[in-house]
Amino acid sequence: MVAHGGGSYGGNGANGSSSSSSTSGGSGGVGFCVGIGVSGGMAKPALKKGPWTATEDAILVEYVKKQGEGNWNAVQKNTSLSRCGKSCRLRWTNHLRPNLRKGSFTPEEELLIIQLHSELGNKWARMAAQLPGRTDNEIKNYWNTRIKRRIRQGLPLYPSKEMAHFQGQGQQAPSLLLPEEPLDQPQPVARTAIRGRPPLQIPTQSVFQIPGGHQPSSQCPSPSQTPVLLSPQPNHQLKTAFANSLSLFDQTRQISPSTSTLPSPHSPTTILSPSYNDTNIAAAAFPGFALTASVHPYQHHTSPLPSPTGGFFQFSPLPQLLSASHVYATPVEFPSSQMYIRQMQKPMHIPQELHDHEVNLENHGNMSMSNPSLSESNRGIELLEDLLDQTNHQAVPTNNSTSLEQSHTSLLNNNMQENQEHQLKSTDVNGWNPDMGSINVCEGSGMVNNKSMHEELSNFLQSIGSPAVHEEFSLTDGLSMPPLDFSAGPTTSEDSLGLDMQQIVSLFQVEPTASASSPWNNLPSIY
DNA sequence: AACCAACCCAACCGCATCGGA
DNA sequence: TTCCGATGCGGTTGGGTTGGT
Image (cartoon, rainbow, N blue to C red; front, side, top):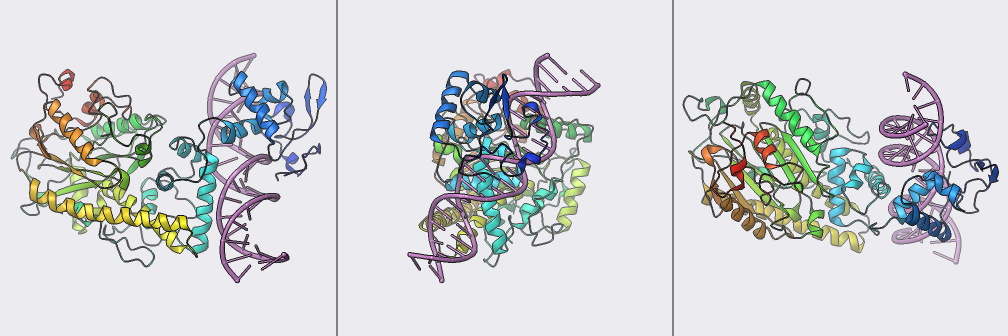
């Protein structure tokens, strides 16, 4: 294919690719980068292929400096460069444009790639958009070598629940995936033994009972027995919320409430926020269940600490319709940005269809896997395992892989320890207030100063009039307040998922506590 | 030192999409 | 509406490099 070296001026396309009657135009109907270029009646030599020389690079750079990007076919016409437009564009985007990051991927980038691939599949360009300075080609190459390695080792590309994730979305899983266990049976969260390693103990504490005993959702107090926190949402409203949530995050989708299918806890929908500048907000939206978002570690590379104007708390888990009998902890997926937001919901009315579904799940004796946010969060752990596993399988670990393994082992251990400590702390300190819902923000682990994040969030909550006290704060009548973009108030939040406070309040039907000086005062009353 | 296999990566290929004429 | 050029994207290829034997 590539006529490396020797400058293929051979006229006939050098290697058979001339047979391609490319549909992509190519001036004069000539196949891509092949044949005789004719310009102004003067025959030019056949377009060159193969590796670029420094001279060619210089010509292209000079041209782009003067003319800007685009109109690549004009390069060949207006310069001495004998390269087709496609080749010029590729060379520019992959090698010559400024702000390219060269060198091997950092561990954080590797994790992000794995995470993105689990969500997007082979959408290299979209993945590259989440990795500033990296090209789709780089990511693609990296991934393909990873695939080859795993195939050779006879390992699945993803842990099993990654498969479930794909299937849950109705997507076709990548063809090379090798399922290792049935997908239709919910697996205990802790059963993450992969390829012979003892199962991790991590996520079991993610679901635990509210102190005071288990209360089957079938016995949830009816609205008449307890204050109604949310109006029962008709199915259409739920669908509308779902459609809205998708369109808010993924502007490429246009989903109408009439046609959208409500996600079930077994079919989470993962969406990305393209509106968040060069950062990576992977969000799983489950109207009525939970919306989780994670700040990927890459963000923290450039901005290690959340600034008061930056707004890092793009977490809005709002399980308004969850059973009262469960508390969900949502460890954020990546260890470098660990921050836990746990919501305790007071009993509330549950729409019948969701209620039935939940009862059904409980009858199977396992709720943990039914929570999409949990499967989301667990995936992060498994990805770490996955990566670890790969380094373990290196025949002879290089220095890099060894350090990587140590690094991730350390992160994993930290993660487990933090989770355990977190559980103990939260049950002891916070308890369960039957009259008020609460959100607990706990410190996580990792490289980020989460204490700072925690303090900022606390300060913000106080500033908007929330009766937040230290680690625990109450919400008005059990309504959830999304701690999203706390810095901006209701009017400006372009730096945060593209949502503004008004949208959040409207979409999720939440009503924050407002003080006289609170920016929330400008929000319309929903109820 | 030679050989070989695995890995890396730049570049090409084919197709899809978009926008203007 | 159709055509066509420009562009973008994902898949594929094969030469170069590296490391083990």
